Image (cartoon, rainbow, N blue to C red; front, side):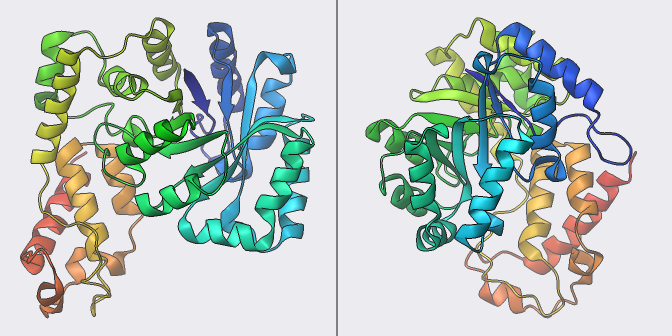
Length: 363
């Protein structure tokens, strides 16, 4: 059930992939029986597909399943899609793919792929045996997911799901619909980009009481793997420690018992209680006259409070333009008049900026 997500390998100081360490990880995964390798045109700034072609070339082609994707976000013509599709065979050093996906579909990009003829083209490629199973990965709201899933007979689909994001994007409703329609599921972000790997210790008390030696990641993986209809759980394993932890979880996989599921639910409840404010990201407050990205500011603040994850918080904060940070607010109050949640936005922006700054500068 464990699939290797090929987008988070160790990198060198110049941000290129450390191919020697990546080879060690792939070798260990192959040795342990991992057979599903998921790459894409964009991963590692375009390095992932060529690198995986090199790393997997030492193994018999029939010993692993290869998944890659049409990069819908940059496709503007059918000719461009055909050119990229042809190049992917060269990059991955193969004459067929096992799983081929339309990458990161939304309602809008799905319509565009239909209008450009990309879906018809890939269906023809499928019939010609250029890949074995046709699916899509998804990032949008549930309504768009249902539209896409019902549009044709898909071989599989890939959605984001973890115990904290049960109602986000396709969510559990999407899982249930796929199960109803008989569409197998590949799950991404089972550990929420690493946020569920090291949550604050106090929220883990229900899990520690049942198994003090189990890692937080293993609980997140087992929650996803216990869902019916889930065939592959992807993990972007960037270290041997992460790989061994997941191998330990999946080599003798145990679905969650009722007691264990209740403990995970309690952990999720405790995490949710740590949220600083109730911003839903609706963006009614935007655009801000001062240029503040209000929803993003609150998203970083809430995530920091929930997970206390220093690397993720620091990355998100550094990645935010200074002009969009909360300290640019000049307290005009327009946002508060528009907020459906009636949040005290001005005061909370000031609080968010002070707390995020203190948290990211404490080390």
